[in-house]
Length: 436
Image 1 (cartoon, rainbow, N blue to C red):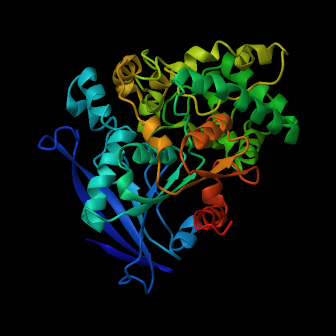
Image 2: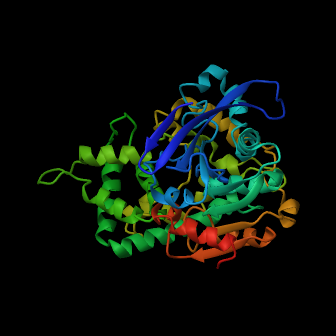
Image 3: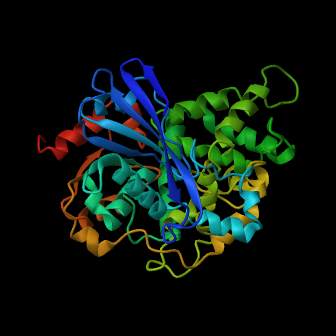
């Protein structure tokens, strides 16, 4: 295994073989990559393990630059394992380059059905037993979707968890995909209003961009057509600490300066592509709504829930903004079917995504009764007006998990773990230890 040294940290590569389908341990296998990180000089100490579960779905683990971000605080007490969840990063990939080898769209969808939180947790349990032994335990830190996975872990394999830290990831245990998006659109609208209060000049700029896109066919550098709906989806950044500022500076450079007919600048289009392309994380789009699929919650398919619910919020119609009926509203992390024809990276996966959206028998991801009897110490940071995870759902879940303690804060947005310089994690560790 490869070992690298960075400022303050030693990094070791690990690769694990796991079943694609954990109900068939003798069947096809895939590889899971993970990176062990330990503080310099402590390599041989018997430190407790901390498993980090990244947000997503479809996000690879962080690539550390020594003792940076929350990792610096974690390395004070733990040996950290950064897991590339199945299908991501250096684990066996699942994308437009590999999935067609599985067969037709139905076969691809059947394969992708094994990439939800339940399979990720089963992977973690196999890895835990290899690293700390059958009776050993480790701590788990789940960010966003990683917090969803942590709740699944506590539902089905709590015996492997010594303590759990969750940041921005207390999912609604009984929320369907439509429930999730029905609650999400008003939160996204609030983030839009706050953005325009901060940068009132952006209202006119955003309308000008949409008007231009309506009247002209504009292509991004990768060939994707930039439609008004695609432009609106830049609102996904409004739920992060610096997202509003980033959007402002993006809009500021939208048009080439000078007289004559307005033209969108190449630098603007290049930056937009960086925000909109799913090249780095196609599973985010393909699996996003399936993370809410549970047969005991809804017998219906997820059915492009964000698209279906959007009709209930006509204020997000770009044409209304152009007619003077309020400012243009950007959307959030919603995944729409048109993305699978607009994005060249997603287009080959369009039919498989349709199969997943039509599936009606998703197994449950949470055991509500078991969580009510939970004995694992759990602490969670809940962000006061989290754009991505509904605060009401989070607090309801917190009340449903025995012994779970929350820290509700408006000091940080959804990315508080990453941007707080370790302060969010430090508070949760102290909360778990009874120091707060």
